[in-house]
Length: 234
Image (cartoon, rainbow, N blue to C red; front, side, top):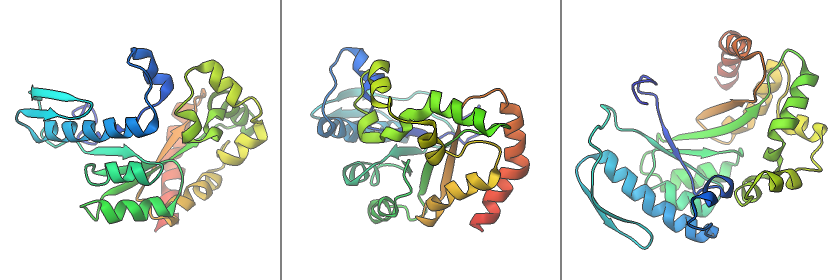
């Protein structure tokens, strides 16, 4: 993966989502237990990336003489998803970057206070739905991404598609259009990104929602969107 990305790969980790993980048959623990497990996992993964043999005996995980035999030339940076104080306390001392979906200045400040590196990246994640037709973009965003309105604390606990459908049944297209930039307007995307850099985030990850114009979107991103974002952020 690091070779395919020309050394730009970052490993993103989090405390888990019910939909993706309850199916393994080990049960779905509450958030406090998942955070304990996440802290232990971060310690193990970081030591594996350091090279050599790793031995670890924790409350949830035990590792005996584990080793990564094919380490990349550049140590893989770890980014952890955060939504509050507890996840920051776990991630900031162990990880290289922070990921959040809300432009919350408090998250940045708490991360900076606990992270050993003052230059650690703070990555904001924002969905967008670019399309030449704004109405088409809104309908697609509502169809594929209306779950985003529920927020992390709800989404992480939903076990299946029926639960997501029930949780989002009252989310309208107008609701989606208000929270997700839809259509070809580059300025609208820049406006939506602005709260992140104003809160102290260093990077933004734009999640483009489907569509049949991906090549066209990438061309617009290269020629118009990225220059506009760089200009706005100075």
